[in-house]
Each structure stands twice: as C-alpha cells, then as structure tokens.
Image (cartoon, rainbow, N blue to C red; front, side):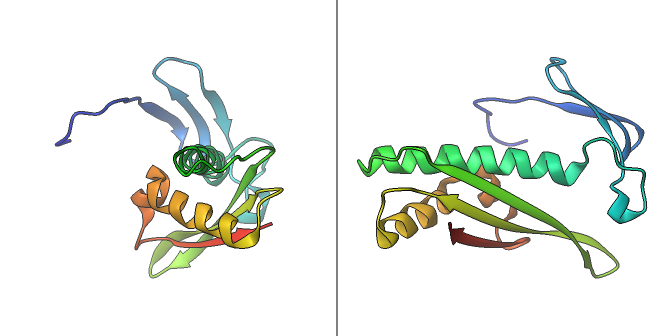
Length: 139
C-alpha cells in the first residue's frame, strides 16, 4: 500500500469462504457465513453481499451527511439503503448496486445534488467506480 492510511483494519475468513466465518482483528465483528438459499446454499447466516450492502449504506450515509454539512443543508431523518446484486460477469461474477436515499423535507433538485456529490465523496463509491454499476435514486 502506497499511502499512509488514516484508519486501517483487517478481517479474516475461515472455513469454506461463503460457508465459514469472518472475524475482524479486534473481534468486534465475528459472524457466521452461509451461502444464501437463492444460490443453492442452506442460508441461515449472513453472506458477503449483505456485509457489503451494510458497509456501503453506512459509508454513503456518512458521505451524504458530510456533504450536507459542508453545503449548510439541514438533513434530518435521512436514510440510505444499498441493494447489492450478484450477477454473472464474463466467466465469473460481479456486483451491481442500487443506492436509495431518503431525504425528507428537501426539494428534489437539492436532494439530487446532495446524492450526486456524496457519490463522488464516498470511499465505497470511489473504490468500485468504473467497475460496478451503481444506480442512485431518491425515495
């Protein structure tokens, strides 16, 4: 890694990948993993797509709040939902993402400006830009 990170963590996967465990180095996150029934597994535990969706939703929401503060736009009762889909991609698989943002009390033009700017600021968005289709929508 070429730059000095301002925060860094790590997680380890054990078992059979999708059917195993993932644990962060500090032990705060320690989850069983199971292949979803939709992919022929038994389900009953979380999976990588759910973890990615949860992380992306939280990251995007933080970026949205940061952008709103910088633009001096009051944002209350906001919510961000990230929907992650696993898709066939060439010989392997890829992801597609839908981000739905709730911004009650804001007019549509202002809300869309916040969403687009947050998409430029969010580290998850930056990490997958040009590689994963992301559809932004206003609830």
